[in-house]
Length: 278
Image (cartoon, rainbow, N blue to C red):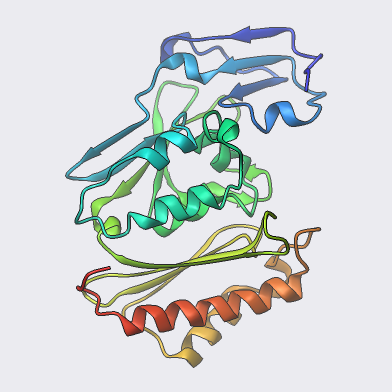
């Protein structure tokens, strides 16, 4: 869609070239959502792709993804063989349900910053304990856990003039066993519930709940909970008002599928030895 209110497009080559923020500014990553509907309040676009950030980095500390890394670049990434959580990458990429054209343009940062409940990069980041690195307008940076970055539908923790630089996932999270469950109302529909469970070698269990709720939730346990304990923890952590309600699913259905998938994930990770092969 043509954005006929845009007067200027800036392409900064370094952080020092980022402009002072003014009303009507917007950061441009891949633009797959930005150009999908009218943006009547926007006057200037700041093209982050011009900054030339390397899309990803792997080291002993874990995985770092630039905000401008595309879905296609992430999906093609080869991870170390001992990172047994690696299948989550492909599972979450495919939950986006975009064409190859979308995959080659849509960015990780765009999916996260848009903060839609069904954002699969939010689910991936939350399940892998990701921390967001944010460039502040005063030249400093701050670090925010992904579960505190996404605050609600299309509402994130960025202040005016701030830019999401990257997401970092620790190596300790990438060596956990995982279980993934997702459902939508139609075969190619937006996720109505997307849950991910992880279990560490010491038996610690975590459940990430996205898509069915308005913001991501991550529930942690020292060991694998019983079915009753898990169900009670879900009830305590997710009040009815937190379940999302739109054309992609009613809150009562999302609540039911959340509980159903949580127990499926608990059972799958109980059946597997935490230190065994995936």
